[in-house]
Length: 492
Image 1 (tube, rainbow, N blue to C red):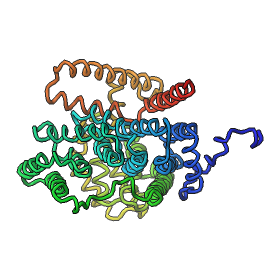
Image 2: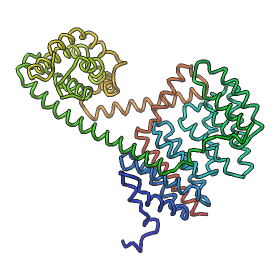
Image 3: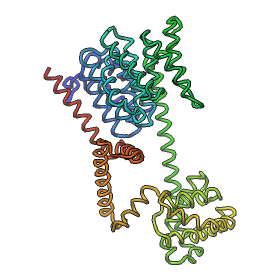
Image 4: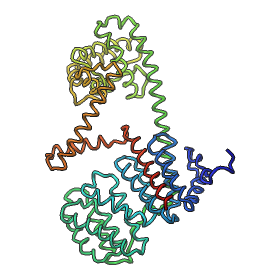
């Protein structure tokens, strides 16, 4: 297809957003300028972000930041329906990633959303209203609340009144003990910013209550409330920092991309080291099992010797960052008290083989001049033996894979049969979903105790983990939303 037959939107430098070494600023600015003029470009940006968000890779991690930079640049100049549609898109993203620990991405999203201006306010108010019952459960609360500061940029009296009313409502909730003071400090900042003088006495009262209630804890709210009172008493002394989204987007994006690149470089280095350690460990295990030292192992010990020695050698090397086969007392202790109990499924007779196998391995490593003081380590192992077995039998020390294998065996499934294990895991997931449905019903009717409520919250977080396959369904629904809006836009 020739360039002349392609749509203008397809001629934009989208492919340049795939680079990872540094932000492609020329492409970012070209796309941002096009988004200001063409709503279709805005929709392409949303779709590409969904693709990058729901498929993890180095390229996509960087692309997320580039696309948010596009929104930050285009945001203040968007017209027509584009500001409201982009605002809703950003608020939906906050809900998607608010629970994550991706602070850099949340900051980039905050910058993009704030750059859109007052069009962000009503979607923010709607979302805040829905999660205000327990802000600590929603990581986006503070980011969203700070976006209400965009009200300072509008002359829309009804919008300003709505924001002021919401901020006062949150302060009143804190005063009544229905909200934490720390969760509503942005309300004080916003009221000071818009010179809401009628809230001065409320803020002064809250400052006193927050100071008295803080005790020995770090008091963040009291100073925030007092600063707001000070500014309302003397507007000429307004020293509030500029909103986050007024910072230079280039510096923010470049720092974020540098962090992403560092992360993936460390990941590559760790992966390459793990591959090398595993190769060297495989060879060392093979040599050991063929040696005269291993010939003394009993049959039941020999059956699991490769597993036990693999955990010891691989995890020992990864923990110490020394050569494979070089074991110290501290590293050996971590391996037998933490790693083996966490990883290795079995029963008491199997766990009773661990120390004899490792003592035989230490004798071989001593003979090969790989581990110093192997005799002393062997004696230490014998002293630790009872604790090692106890740890291996303690479910509190088991990893998820080990729990799945033991659960499958207890349920009559063969853990060595992939089809049977998949069936067992499917049944477990169905049971978990059933528990969730039952808890929803019980929770809505107020039937849960406090302990059960805490257990429920943990289950909710598990089921809401974006790393599970439902992530792909979220992506499909996100794309469907955009398609539906496209249809509505075309109908208009």
